[in-house]
Image 1 (cartoon, rainbow, N blue to C red):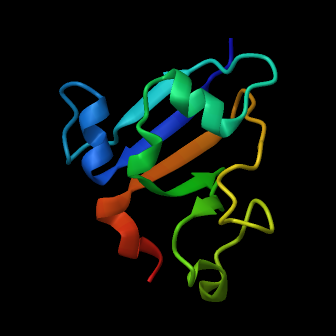
Image 2: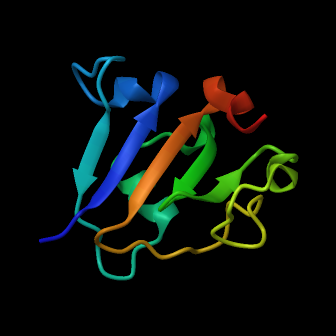
Image 3: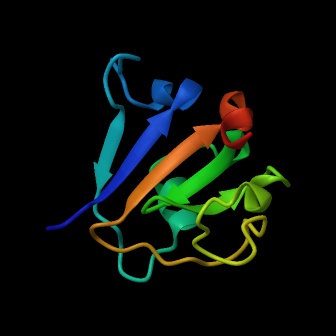
Length: 107
């Protein structure tokens, strides 16, 4: 069964036991039918309050940074500040999660 790759950066690496800063920290999980990005992250125990940016397949999906669109990051949706949007996740997707300690990533 195909999976979703969830790449963790910064302090979020702690969610994977024995992760090392010198190696990629990745969680592989199968999405449930009809599952959204946010519901998948909640299901696997990612603390949403610690997230600052989420990338979906290399495009900016959600951010708390008001400057992100002006920096010309490709966006997965028009309103990257709407963390309530129900964006579906599917097998083969790749998520990049950046916590509050990585807030200046896009600056």
